[in-house]
Image 1 (cartoon, helix red, strand yellow):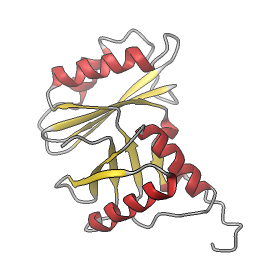
Image 2 (image 1 turned 120 degrees about the vertical axis):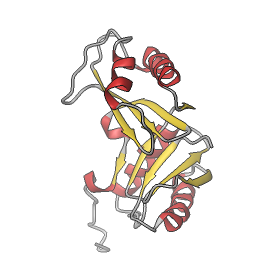
Image 3 (image 1 turned 180 degrees about the vertical axis):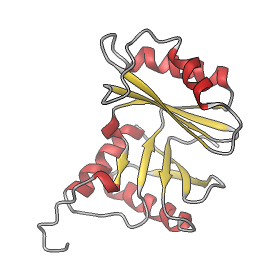
Length: 179
């Protein structure tokens, strides 16, 4: 199960969320090739053809403009790479991505979301941070090393905070008279 999006929705709304995600994909011109239930309430994964960060940017633009406001898609985290859920694999992939997407002068923080696994959050963070020479900054870093841990696969990204689409954090422009 490879994925490049992690999507949050309400409990028991995963099916509607998956349908809406495909509809949004059509609206922003990026096809959602598949969606999968994660086995965790209110959480699905998806695979978008193309750049997942570009997808979340287009989604934010679509919603900010007031052209479409999702009912079921509450949050979308873009994923750049998935690996087997194993601390060594996660660390290796995160450090590789950091080498590509983290400039020498940029600050970062590691954000770990884990579900259904017995791995220690701090151990994951330390295994990554100990191999990156950039300065850590917990408040307003330039980039976030986002680690989404599931029992068999883990998704990793090096992104800016606003590359994560969050419906709660968007001011929807409702001047069109439909709000």
